[in-house]
Every structure is written in structure tokens, then in C-alpha cells.
Image (cartoon, rainbow, N blue to C red; front, side):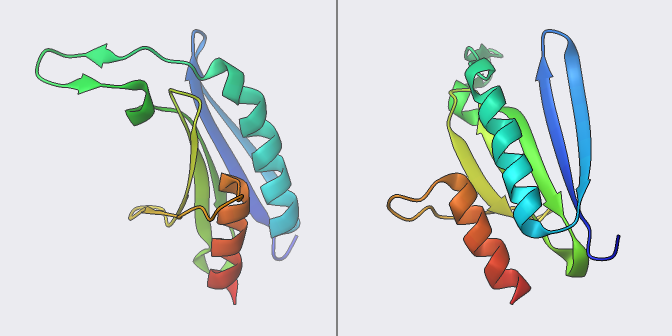
Length: 120
């Protein structure tokens, strides 16, 4: 499957950590799977604040689930599902760069735009 794109979904919950991988023929299919899977998890993402005495982590600062896309030519990006139910797109892997959402754009649309620019 030349040109395949891998979607990796990581989530944690009462049953522990869970990792799923999907290998798809192209970027459009990978983005569709990413959106479907993370949207399904959005209702379960609600987290409480974590207070460690020294530092407090609000739900928006916690990543409840992460969906990543990896493909040819080092194409990397994904969407984080936060503990408050919000989502944020990013590019990169080790050095993540948040993708700014434009007005009326979903995190998945923003990721699609950013990855399309990288691909050329």
C-alpha cells in the first residue's frame, strides 16, 4: 500500500490506556477516520481539575485523547481532545505546532489545511 497513511488514536479512561491504529490509502480517508473517532470520544472526555499542591492542571490543560496522522515525506499532525471537551489541531511530532483555526473552521478543517500546505 504505497502512500499509506497511519492514524494512531490514544485515549485513557476507567479501563486504562487504549491505542488503536488504522492504515489508510490516503490523507482524506485518514482525516475522516480521525474526525469520526475523536468526535465519538468527545462526550467521554470530561475531566476534573488535578491539584498536585505545587501545580494545578485544569481540564483544558489535560489531553484526554490524541489522534495522530503519519504519512509519506514525514507528514505529521493530529488533534488533541482536551479534558474540557475542546479540540486543538497540531502539526509535527516532537515539536508540535498548534494550528490556528480560522473563523468557522473546525480543528479537523484546520489540520487538513495545514497538512495540505506541507504536502504541497
